[in-house]
Length: 458
Image (tube, rainbow, N blue to C red; front, side, top):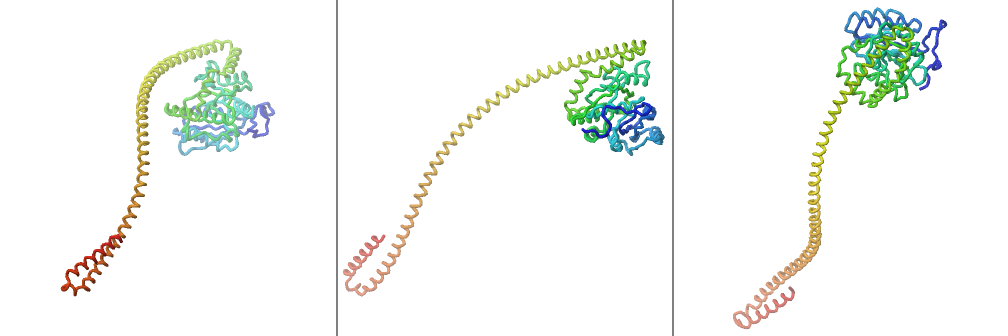
């Protein structure tokens, strides 16, 4: 993360009159949806304190449903240094500020809610804080309504201290915490300075996951931190935040959805925030302002003490409520543990039964294996016997063929003998009447010789 511009880090430039000026191009982006009076106070405060700083002011009309708001924005846009962008349809906070960040080119950006109010020197001090170190990516000021960046009560929505104007309180922060800053787990989106080199590396806000606005700045800061950038609080700037205007229609379901998305994308986020809240490293900056208020006005001491007591009481109440919550959770966990133990017991019994069934099947399988081995042995013996039988059948077929050939030869011999007998009878027929006894003896002797030859030939 190298330097993107030529000015030295840590220096705050001033003009010839000693008034701080901006060293880097920056655009203040104000998305507007509803709330004419809050929007008017916000824009007029920015314009009133922009004479020396000369930042570019980008106002985006996110298809406001209030005609008087759109009319006022068109009137303001006629002033020098003010540019108005108009969404044809309502895009929501995330897509709207993304449009603004793209539109501003290479300038740093400040995302400023339309229900905020700035004071003298706010932007130059925030920019100076952003460039005190090369790896600072985002800067958030203190406010009366900014969760972990809140004052006078930490992590609360506060009113301005009794008897103090916004300008006076902002001046107290500038004096008590001059040039001070500290790391925070996430910027708070009501007033968020983003360096352009950080924005170019990390990318725009995540419209797909965070829709119309809640948690998008925390996701951006977690992505920035993973890329090596730091998120810090500018302890010498205080910006008033009304709250409840920009997200007056925000539903709890949408907030829960954003928290679920953060837990999925950045599971470590809630633990980092919880540790930050527990350690409260910003307390010393709030204490410094308290000390300055007490030193300036003795009468204010009672107010400060009263506020501290109120804060103390709120903490005690929170602890008691948290204790009750823990007790309820403990009972729930004990019930769940008992149910889990009972379930484990049933599971163990089921596993024991399953093991017995498995053992039974193992024994049955072993018995089957033995039967299969025996059958394989018998099959092998049968194969050997079949082989011998095949050899015997082959020999028998050879003998049958030879016998058939012998019978065929015999049949031919008998045929020959029959023919010879006929010839013999015909040749000696003349003797049939004269010498019957002699003829009979000759024929018998002839037949005996022929049968003897036939038997020998067979």
